[in-house]
Image (cartoon, rainbow, N blue to C red):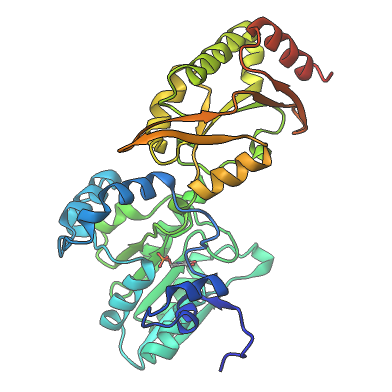
Length: 382
Ligand SMILES: Cc1ncc(COP(=O)(O)O)c(C=O)c1O
């Protein structure tokens, strides 16, 4: 039973509060959705822009039933054969699809402990399997011990071993040698499921993907809901703190601007030239005030033309409006005729010092030599 005043829900439970009949989706605004998608990150702007562009067509089209194109693209990207790729609506969906086929009620399944709790839940509560916990030793820094795990799996007669690598919640990853040893030690009929949901966050943890072609026991589960949820024009979410130690200049404009924006950006590229090597300690940001037409892909083409170190920043219209308000930047569409419009906008540039403090507001048309001198002074700690 959920308390009447409960406002935060984990994962699927949020639909109990919203109403799983979807009759009134506005109820979602009244709850905190602690979803498995870790959804406090905005979706990647390029994904939203692409979906928006094709939405009318998408909603009247049935997607290909077996997703062969997607499988082929994933296989090619990961150097695998498409026959070794199975796609689903997230790792969770694949877990619910695969496990009842791999394990029956009463079968033994080995999991690491501690480890992402959903696995124990599915095996114990959904399938009714007998869960064996291979305890990770805190004194060993929670590093899995291949010999101990293999011995326990064999002794308990487990049919399946499930591991998360790098593990959640310990953050500990396994090296390639450890995995090879474990696979060599495990009985030939024990299946091994390795969940690599967090592998892109830990650069030195090797993926077991390549082994699926040679070891029939192995399943490697990948998720697109974590790494790809993070989102500049390169797809990364940015805040001022990312540029600590640099002088940051912020200009608001739009790529179809006929005069002010290209002039401001080319003036900034002259400033960068005059700064020479110190230019690497300056981050020029161009924030679009035209998120309807300036897709991240367009910003990625346009902004670096002036200097490849410049970044174009995109946000959803509400977010841009909020940021512009913070900076007291004004912008307004003018002469909108069937999607053809210009935008009147403030044309000054804000300059932050390397400690992140707002120090200068430069009017449009300032001499590049003077701007370079001012930035040089900020870099010198003045
Ligand atoms: C270790 C691990 N595996 C799988 C999932 C589920 O991922 P997906 O969003 O792809 O269903 C999560 C979600 O938090 C997770 O932490």
